[in-house]
Image (cartoon, rainbow, N blue to C red; front, side, top):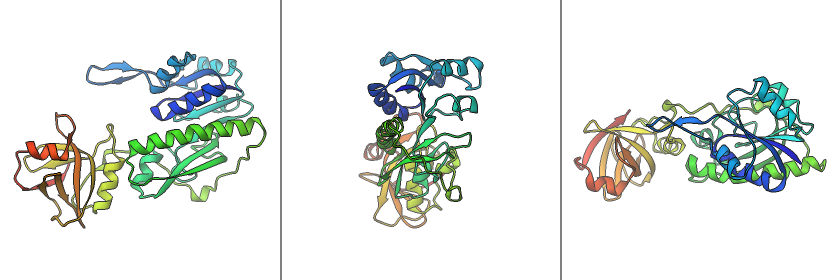
Length: 307
C-alpha cells in the first residue's frame, strides 16, 4: 500500500518504522524544526530524524493549508494517509485525498480523552485502563469512526513510561488496521458522542503540588508531569525543586510539613504523605531522594508549599 505518514513526536516513531517495513511510504509530513535548549538551536522532530534514517522523503509543514503542502500530499497519490500525533487538525482538502481515508492512531479509548493530552489526562483522572484507538479522521477533533480499540492497564506508570508502552501498541494496531482496510475487513463503528471527554493540553496548574491535596491526587500530578510542565515545590529555605517521581509513604506527616528520611524527603499532604524518590533542585541535575538528603542543608523537619 502507498502511504503518506504524518507525525511529529517520539510517540509516532514506532508507527512510522512499522509502516515503512511493510508498505511504501511515499512522503513523511512533520512539524518544522523547533527551538530547543538554552542555545536556541533548531532541533528536528523525532519523526523527521527517523524518516531521514529510513531515507524517506520529508516535508516540514508549518501549515497544512498551504497550497504547496496540499499539492505535495495529493501528488503522491496515497492509498491512505496515516496520522500519529501530528499536532494539528487536517483540513478537508487533505481528508479527501486518499481513497482509504486518513487513519489516525490516538492514545486513548475513544470517545474518552479526545484531544491533545490523552495520556496525561488519563493519569490525572485516576483511570485504571487506557489504550489506543484507530480512527478514520473527520474534520472534528477525534470524532471519527473507530475500527480498533486496544486496552492497556496504566498501573503505576508515569506519563513517559506509559507513552512508550502505548507507542508500541499504536504501531501494531495501526499496521493491523491498514491490512484489514486493504483487505476489506475493517469495520468502522461511529463513536458515542454522549460519552466523549476532552483531554486539553496540560498546564502548570494541572500538576501543581499543594499540601491541601490528598496523597493520591499529588502522586497522580507528579506522574502526569513532564519536562515541559513540571511539578514543583517551594522548600523552607526558599529554594524550589521539581519533584520528578515519588511514591506513597505509609505514615503520617502534618500537611505542609516535610521530614528527611534516608530514602528521601517525605511530604505531608491532606490525608497522608509521599516519599520523593527523585527530584531536581533549581539549577542542579536530577538527584535521587537519598542523594538529596545527604547533601541537604535543611532541618529534619521543615515546611513546604506550592509554587
